[in-house]
Image 1: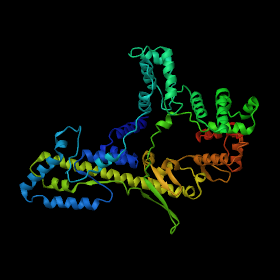
Image 2 (image 1 turned 30 degrees about the vertical axis):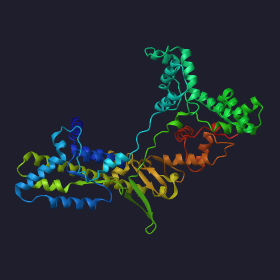
Image 3 (image 1 turned 135 degrees about the vertical axis):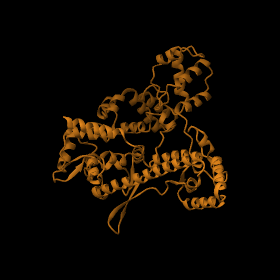
Image 4 (image 1 turned 90 degrees about the horizontal axis):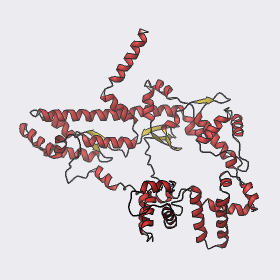
Amino acid sequence: MSGMRFETSQGMKLGQTLSPKLIQSAEILQLNAMELQERLEQEVEKNVALEMVMPGSSDDDSRRSEEHREEAPQGGGATEFERLRRLERQYGDQWNSDGDGRRAVRDNRERDPKMDAMANTPSRGRGLVEELSEQWSFAEVHDPAIRAAGARIIEYIDDDGLMQTPLETIREQSAHLAGCDWAIDTLKTALERIQQELEPKGVGATSMREALLIEARAKLEEETDLDMAEAWADAVTLIENHYDDLLANRIPRIREKLGWDADRLDRARACLKRLDPNPGRELVPPEQSIIIPDVIVEYDPETAEYTARLADELMPRVRVSPDYEEMAKEIARDTEARNFLTESIRAARSIIEAIEQRNTTLMRVVKVVLARQREWFEQGPQHLKPMPMVDVADMLGIHVATVSRAVSEKWMQTPRGLVALRTFFSLGTENASGEEMSWNAVKALVQEIVDNEDKTKPLSDGAIAEELKKRGVTIARRTVVKYREQLGILSGPMRKRH
């Protein structure tokens, strides 16, 4: 018992005495390429001794630093005095502030890469409510009450373009506002005008079904071709009277009820595919996240091996400023300035060391991935092998948490495309031949089986399990269901093509 108490207390002590340097290293290790760049910009902003060297400009920066040193006055106290004056001119705000609103003051002759990047960054797009409010302001609505009610309703439209808040709720939450009587009939009229006036059609609908119906009716009114007009009229009929059957893919039942032939029904369904149940997404598309790979993997035909390197060609680097290193050595009389510079240089070296350690750890993990998952690179996702993080940690002699941080949100550019590094780490099973397969590889097999099935006779979950068994992988039907849902694959009846 006493031994157990000792081990527990030791663990708590170690956890409580993590040095700031270790904490910083762990934070840097977890950052991906984009996050690391942001962190470096923050560090440069707050540390006068840390310089950012943009790609391709290291020689120019070195030459410029050399010129600064040659221009500086030489000799004893005059040198110290002049350097302190220049330091104060350049970074006076940082010395005299408590850390808030720090800014670097640059020579007007130099370009600030960060400011250039900010100037070239597109501004954040307006939200859906702002877009619709502008349209509403130009709509031909002359009744002040209807205009006020419409403006209020627009505030409740969600990102999909749907207005699913009950009008009674809007009435209760708007009673204190002037400009309208907030009667239900007024709100209904305003909502109808929103659906009529605003683009794209379907915005302001109270459900997906109503959005589709509004869009289909608008298409029908605009259509000039008689055959297409008939198809759009049929599409309206399907939405109005057979919506539930459509969602359940009960096509034979619809044909039986309507007495339509297959060609007529197919033309109407083709029209439905041109509609958008979330019309708001068309007006304000979701922001596209940019993925920058941390590692580039290439195949070397000469050695028949896969090699990896950091994708840092376009990444800015940081270094300790040569000017301030020299300044820290020469300042002898001003203790406060010397201590400030010494601490700034120490912090700069600490962040540089953390970055080097991050890169080294990341590449060590990647080399294990290349050795263990060679079949994935050569033959595809179906050949991904189980690779628990704890095994990799044991191989490298590091903690499993370090491996987890090293692969967190990191991406690899490979001959098979861009892939998350964490993809290679999963548990698995053995097939009938005794070969190891990761669960991600089993999922890839499920996807392959569904892709190659006869869509007029789609496989049931049990049939997929049987097909996997033929390929040497035995899993339960409920596991097939779980993987199918994770892959976004519909059930057999919903996949059936009539």
